[in-house]
Structure formats: structure tokens, C-alpha cells
Length: 258
Image (cartoon, rainbow, N blue to C red):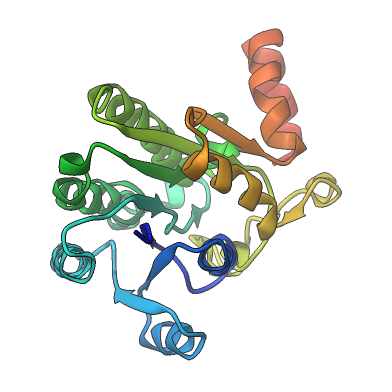
């Protein structure tokens, strides 16, 4: 039987290359995104599509119902990839912006996963994978709200993994460092006159979105998926630096590269 995988955030970047790769590997891919134009583009590429706005609880409910109907209540994989970033110093971030950041990057992901677990648990197998970030491990000035949402996603995913132990469903996190994608263009800046940009040093370590694919394949197909999959040199280096460096020294390094 062809295994069905739902991928969120398929309009571009990681989601789009993942959808194309998994379809080529024989999966039945359900490609989800928010904008009507992006849905039309995906359909032109031959994908089954799901309209999904993670910031809208009714949209999440309807999307989950559509997935369950299309798959006959049997979903193998859920790749929670959709998300965006709010950048700016904390004093410039409104409560509404903070809430919307969490609504999309965490609350919608929780609701969608909760609604789709009944299509996975009875079958004793499956994979749930989250796109986190190196910013779920560290933070820097002006990226605190986005980092907070990814720190929370990491904790949520760890808890989900423990709670699903013994169910046959494995839970993993993919943790990219800087990638060339539309993510940067879609960042919502709280201070348009002082936009937050990546430091020039990060450019030499930036990879393309398809760097995620080997990690995603392993998370979906290995009998023993890893808990975390760092992507890019920066994502590999950060956990080591956190263990080795005193916190104040790490702060100094991160302040200097923000």
C-alpha cells in the first residue's frame, strides 16, 4: 500500500522540495499550504492539495477532516514544516504579533497533530516530524519571538515522543541552520526601518533547502529514527558550543553575530 504523508508549508523551500522528493520515492504526498495561488501552483505540478492556515483553528479542523477523508483514515507520515518568523527587538513586538507567531509555529501544529493522530494510532506505525531550527537551541538579539516559538516546539515534540512511546509512531525534529529559501523574504519585521538580516558570516555556511532531504528520508524510513537531525554546520556546532562554553561567553559570541 502506498504510504500517505501530509506536508505543511509546501509553497516553497523545504516543503516544496520535500513534496517533490517524497513523491519521487513513491509516497502519496498531500501538499498543504495557505494561499490560493500556491495551491493552484501545486495542483499544476500534479499534487493532491490541502488548504491550511495554521493561524485559523477552523482551517486546521477542515484540513484534518480532508486528510482523513482522502486517506481513508490511514496516514503514515505528518511533516509539520510550515512556519514563519517575526524579527525585531522584544520591546517592538506587540502581544498580537507574539500570539500570532505562536499560533502558527506551535498552536496550529499541536491542533493538526491532535486531530490526525486517530488516523495513525490504530495502525501501529507512523512518523511525525517537525521542522525546528537552530533557533530552537539558541537565540540571538532581535530573533527572540521566533526563537521562543521554536524552543517551545522542541519541548512539545520531546513530550509527544515520550507520550507515543510504544505506539509504533516515531517523532523527530529537523533542525536547520541558515538555508537559501523564501523564509527570509517572508520574515515579518517589527521595525521596517531597521530590518534584521543574517550576519555576513552566516552566508558561507548557508545551504539550499534540499540539504534537508537526507534527514527527512532517514526520519521517515529508518527503523530507528533519530530524535534530532541537525542540518548545516551551524546546527551541528551549536549543541557542542552550548556544552563547552560558559553562558556569558556564548552570549558575547551571539551578540556579536546578530
